[in-house]
Each structure stands twice: as C-alpha cells, then as structure tokens.
Image 1 (cartoon, protein in one colour):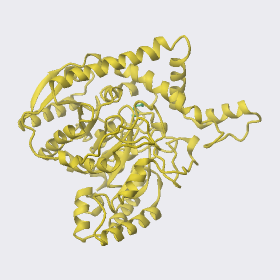
Image 2 (tube, rainbow, N blue to C red):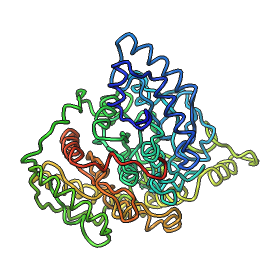
Image 3 (cartoon, protein in one colour):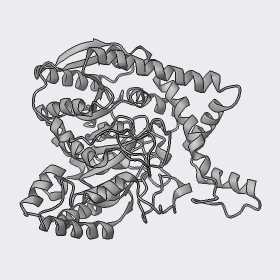
Image 4 (spheres, rainbow, N blue to C red):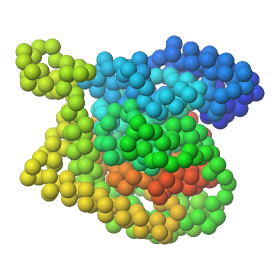
Length: 487
Ligand code: GLN
C-alpha cells in the first residue's frame, strides 16, 4: 500500500523502524493531493512548504530517538481553527483574507506533538450546514461518488481523510459536524464531551455546543489524535479541569456484559431502509461479541432539531456580531458613512445560510419573543439532557444511526433548509446534552455510499465509547475499504 493510505499507527511503526521518513510520508500525501484534489476539492489553503519544513524538523527529532505518536504525521485542519500566519477563512467571504496572529490551543498542541500541518480544509460557512455546499469558495465532493455531498460542516476534513489527502484531520462539531461527514465518507469521527478539548482559537459558532474533535481512518488513530489535543486549558473558561487521559488504554478486546442502549425514538419513520439495515447489523455484531442490548427511551428526541435551531442561531447571532468590517475581515469599500459600511460589509460578506441564522437567532432573542423561544428551548434542552441521564442509568453506551439517510446528491437539499435541518435529528442531541459521541463506519447503501453508527457515552466516558467502537471495528472491515473512484 502507498504511504498516503496508511494510518497514524502504521506510519508510526515504519518511522520507528526507520523504514521511512516524515519527508517521504509528507511527499506522498502532497502528491496524492495533487492527484485527486481537483476531483474532491477538500482543501481551501494548502501549505506544502510549511509541511515539508515541519517534516524535516520531525525527522530530526525522530533521528534522535525522540518524539511521540504524532511526530512526522501529516494532518489537515478544518478552516474554522486559527493557525498563526496561515489564512483561516471559516468558509466565508467575510474572512477570506484573515490571517490569525496566534495559534488555537489545539494547533499549539499538535505542533508540540511534532505533527505536520498540510493546510486548511473546506467547510460550510461558519460551520453552518450539513453538506459543505454553504462554503463561500467551492463545494467539496464525496470521494465515494463525486455527485454526492460529503456531509458537513467538516466535509473537507472527512473527504480529505477518506480520499487519503491527509492521514487525519481536526474538525468541529456543534450539531453533528464531525460525526455526520465522518459517516458519509466512511471514516471515524469523534465529538468529545463538552469541555474536553479547548475552544481557544476555534472561531465560535454556538459557544455552548461547539467542540473540536478528530476525524481519522480508524478508532486507534482517533484515540491517538484525541490524546494529543485534549486537556485543560486556562485560556478556555469552559475547559474541564481534569487530568490527562491516555485514550489508547481503552482499546482492548472484549465487551462481554457491556450494556448497549437502543433508543426506539431513533428507529422511527424517516429512517432509510439502507441505514436501518446496517445499524441493526451492527447491533448484531456487538451482541455476537457478548454485549447486552437494552431498550432505552429518549422521549424528547422529537424536539431536538427545533430547539437546536433556536439555541444555535441565537448564540451565532451574538458571536457573529463582531464581523462588522472594523477590526478584521472584509470591509466594504463603497460605503460613505459608518452605518452604511456595517450594512454593506455584512450583506456582502455573509452568505445566505449565515444570514438566515443571524435573523433566526436575533428574532428568538428579541424582547417579547425571548421567553417564548430561547427560554423555552433552553428548558427543553434540560429535558433532553435528563432523558440521557435516565438512559445511562440502564446502559453503558447508547447506539443509534448517525444520519437518517446515506449521503444525498449535491443540490438535492440546499434550497430546502427545513429538509437540510431535519437530517441533523440524530446528532444534535449529543451537543445539547454535552455528551461524547463517535461515528464509526458500519455499511454501505445500495449506491455504494458509506453509512455510520453513532455510539454515545455519558459525560467524560470517551474511553467506553472508544472501547465499543474499537471492538466493532475489529470485527468488521468497512473502515478498510477505499473509494473505488480514486484508486
Ligand atoms: N448541521 C448543523 C448546522 O447546520 C450542525 C453544524 C455543526 O455541527 N457545525 O447547524
């Protein structure tokens, strides 16, 4: 197999045996990008010089017998995470020329770990979307079928991992943006418990929901990347003051007696038969390994999309107020006075979906409507969290589909926001409740497009979900298949 197709842990072995160098690995991935990115369009900004410089540095460290699991491993970064001296657009015209003067904490940690940064990958503008069609720059395509969406908003990350245009990637998840594209592209994606990974330097969408997390080729790589980026950060006031964890310790064979909750509310009408078949099959695989399945009920699931689409836009309307053309970002040049400058900058700088969210959020927060919308939504959010609390009294993890359908065609839902929002039904509850959840490949649709299962855990139970995911993966080969189109 080519170097670009290997996992972090496989490459690590080769590096330790001195059979390859990071410069060779990085060269292989950069050549792969050249070969396939004109079809997939995963990248917004590619930084080959930076990558090769970091690779040389990594080789130097490895030569001395130093470094860790990520030393010399080429990684891509969703363009919502600030990188010092490197464009960070957030998929938006309003930030198309924005070059941060500092690194996000996760970037600092990756650099300290010796990782090689390849560049910044595409996303829906301000992470608002489920298909990457809302990027101001271009649409990213699903490597398994180029007419289909890769999911979103971390579509560039998922597509780049699936197409072997990076070894692993960091994405962000506010309502499913790591898990849903991971499922749609046939890779592993983890949204950690709220507070596990620092949000310092992550451009805010909805601050009470946003988390950064890994998108990788398998569960082992997921644990390795999470190891590097998690941990308490005084620069993020919502970061959990907990000790560091070695998540690879959770990757042990055996799940006998583990209780897997199956919520009936996630298997109702609207679930595609292809998805249902793959998820039921996954449940059988886990039962075959000795796990015990129990029925759990999450009765407020039906309200999750409605309240997410009040809370997330409300927070976004406040977070996005800073883009007014004054301190940074695009400023409209035609305006003659201040108010006109604000107006023109924001009308020209933001795309249609972002404007829709700002209007939705501003409305939900406005006096007279606040109690009816925002306050009510916050109360129902608590009920959703309580559903999970009760559910986890009866089981160790909860297993569900990630998305109700396999990937859809480019253009199919982009003009129908309601349909697009409904596709988030199974992923938004984890964000509303702050819970960790992982997406793992579990099958393919009739058209040959990937399908994923979601494994949710209690707060800070990442190790439990990684353990179940690892055991499932070890019994199946879905994660090893490659998109036939690109081979
Ligand atoms: N699809 C959801 C939205 O459009 C989730 C996005 C995300 O997780 N960033 O808001």
